[in-house]
Image (cartoon, rainbow, N blue to C red; front, top):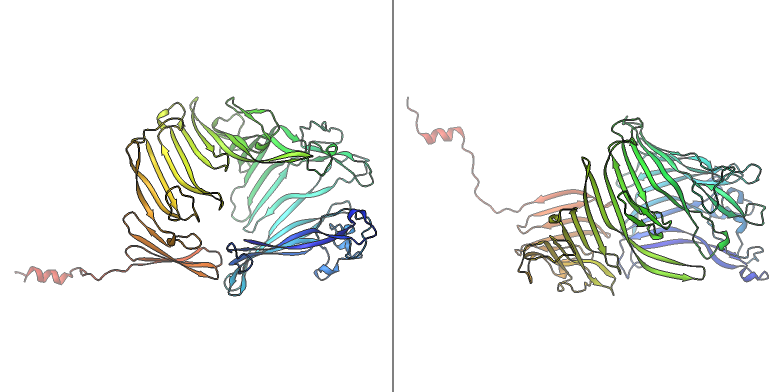
Length: 608
């Protein structure tokens, strides 16, 4: 895959050298094209089999004829209402006041088109036209809003258009406005409804704001849906501490406008206090300007599903999350879990109720602990950042049975270097050791070639992973895979599975394996697809692929009886178009059903 970008250049006074012309820098960029189906070593030298083209236009609110790239000047800048043209500096001029780079764009994405190759050219398959408008924020500013998406199909003869998807907005104030502060409320649109292209509508209803100018929380301990920011409003030389709203979704309603199906209403209730954390140091903002503005959500969210009415068929689930706020979180069975930074957003527990009422009975719950491992650390003068693997560790499931709980549990362990699962303990029902199993996974690695995902062996035994199995009787399954014609366990070169084996017996010391499939490196094509598959009896099936301009258009499979199955694919999408089967049969005698007069002759002349 290869990407192609457009570059936007600007100039600034480097090093405060005001007597020199501005120095160039890249102030913005945009994706123009993504090409698919290329091979390493020839990404830019061979034409792609398929590609996605991204079309951009100017962020301009005038007629298209007046919004060409060359039309943006000091005199016409008002037609580009959200482009900071005052930060622009022309080539070969002195950039007075432009003492540091600024980063912005004058482009907007207007169309996305998928294409496939036909010979030396490309043909459109699908396109999505993006319609925009500029919303009036009520303070002299305007914001770009995506309001329509129109899907058109181009494959085949002619074109076919779907109705436009419409995205509607609700204008809400960003700031906690204070009377007399002479600062605008910063009204901005938020998504409030989506009219889809199949006759449905989705409405988003927001909760009322929690903060007012007279009821602000402490800046270092907010538990409400608002947060502080230190910034310089227009005309202010020193930063002020200002407050901004966090909008929460109250419910989402899906309505069938054509078929008359009942509404689908998802209602959200946020339990406990809102979580905020100090914004992370980034090496740009001074520490004194950082605030507790890093949103960490709620520790528990209740979700009820209904048709908009109160009914016994309504459902309720409750979701408990880690938020990375430090300390510990206690689950419903009393176990404590560290609320570490790297686990922020991890769903700790899910509870399901028999109905949507608060008094309805809890029928099941699942508790999920997490495994984390540091993979990289970067130390800077302004702070230390770390990257982590985060994986599910132990899952405990509880199902109500009368007044008791049936508990089951699984634990997965991982390779600390790669984050791959290496063994899974399935304890089955807790208290019943007879159903314990352990699954171990090993890999065939080639670190030099960065091949780390090839599974070499999967063994499942009828004891937990801490126990020692009697492999004569307790191996449930044991499958081995070898790659690229090499011995079992050898580092793969390409990653083509050339031999698959399964355990058939074990004498307690060594196992006996049966070959399930066997192949040679020549039995795979350059894409890693099998072109010959051999079964344990030595019978083989061949597979032929037809490529047209880099895309698969036909596959022919011939089995050991020389019967063929042909599948043709739609070139535009790769979906099967038709499948046909042809059986080659040797000539053999056919039996004809006797006719009535044949039976009479066989019985002889009638007597009468």
